[in-house]
Length: 313
Image 1 (tube, rainbow, N blue to C red):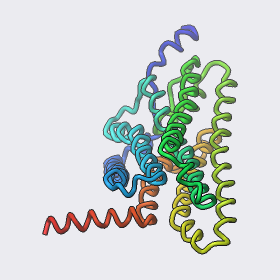
Image 2: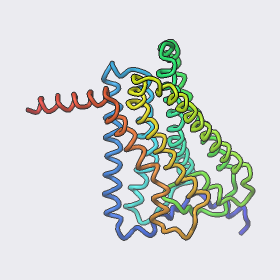
Image 3: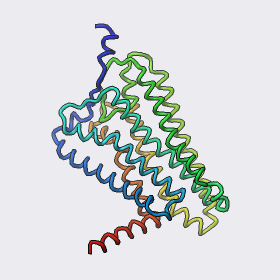
Image 4: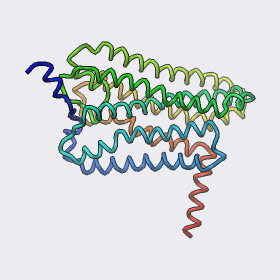
């Protein structure tokens, strides 16, 4: 059988991350389903709250709404397939399904950086240039920023998916719970130099987002030090933003380090946690952090809960 024959046979991939956990898959299924339900609940609650309250139709809350919608999209790329795998003895995914899953999960994860960069810009204008805020953050500008946030990660990871799809593969075994581009590329029979360069370019691009956020906050801190009012704004709206940034940065750093430099000596359970941490913690913590910290959202949610209790009574 020739190399070309081997390549033509790679139509499905085998996911091996669950091999050592099948003895307690019922418990794992229950916990995973609970986690997914919590993610849906907290994100939908925040999205609906922002949509229903006209007082929350402001740039910062529109960006937050998009952040939560993205959390729902990204986790949908992982949890339904993972739950099915927990119920099945065979953990496989089609070639096309693998590329689509990788595109959805990673474009969504890196969208967080884009929208957080936009939110940092919004806070910079609101606190450092308050008199110009309403002339700068118009609905047209907000629409442009939201569009950029969605399009840039989608374009980046579509490019990576197309490059991965052009590789001739000599294997079909992915040592992970889900698909991602680098795991597919590592199965290639030919040179992966172009894929490697493109991958690092995308990492640098989104690292630039983090750098922009840090620079914005240096300016914000300088401005807030001289004003008690600005310090209050910083604590109310910027602290949740920084917590979200720290949250997603650490989570994706785990995944990048594991994907590219992970050791085979690590326990499978630890490798699995490193691989899915960004699919568990940020989608839950982001809406919780903002829901508890932002007074207008917290007040609106409490008002809705109180109204429901009265209606039941």
